[in-house]
Image 1 (tube, rainbow, N blue to C red):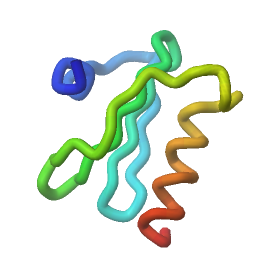
Image 2 (cartoon, one colour):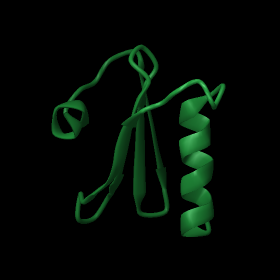
Image 3 (cartoon, rainbow, N blue to C red):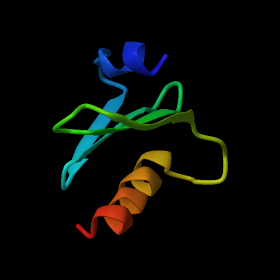
Length: 69
């Protein structure tokens, strides 16, 4: 499912690079993908629950804490 999502694009998709980490989020399905930009290694893939009002921003902020960026 992560590979399939990685190849998707569209108006509902938000993307951001933090250091060497790529974060992708689908607003319609709440899927979150986090990969390494160089090796394209999958870091995590999940469907966000209701804990975060903005799952994309939460994923980006968490990535920033991990990378120090």
